[in-house]
Image (cartoon, rainbow, N blue to C red):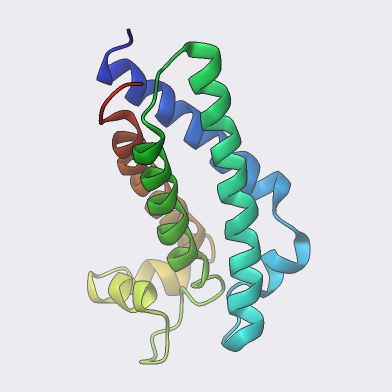
Length: 153
């Protein structure tokens, strides 16, 4: 029976690999363009992207569970996937807004500016993408921990 540490490492690898595939290969071009727009159009585009992203992660996690006999508790795995999905949506609604210093900017953008990232975000057009990916990877780590814990089947 695999240890919790082994299940965590495998879950992290599966979720991280699937993150790359879901974010860069599976994501529809139109959704990528529109997911940060305000209003229903942006929310719908982001929701579609997060749905395919989460499906990609779920398939990868299920494949790892089966191939490596991880014996994941799928209630916990589902909670981990939900955590990854919710936090992914929150960050992706910020697409294109990272340099925005207005009070209308998304909450994560305002938080980044409050913690001192304004100069970087305003002067380096890549900074928002770096913060976005750091946010995703941090939450994927927690999602893997959630998925790896609990009773083994």
